[in-house]
Length: 97
Image (cartoon, rainbow, N blue to C red; front, side, top):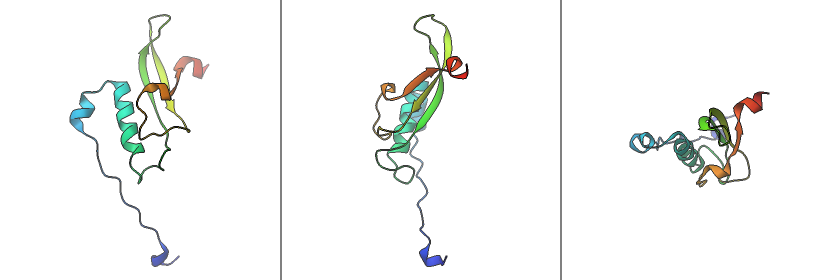
């Protein structure tokens, strides 16, 4: 492969705001970083992208704190997803069982 046929890619810009990130709860942080990644075409294709995070949440039935795995899969725009309703969520112990 000759040097003239190599495609050069841009490095992603760091658009993370420490002030904004520090003000967010864990769910908000997942959405914020997902939007940043999804809106940067050097990282993901337009309208695509996947992210996930394990968050501690209160179980609505028992009131216990449990690990919940949130997964943003295919079929939605990572750059504009605005709430966790666009994520699959599964209580982690039931996934491991």
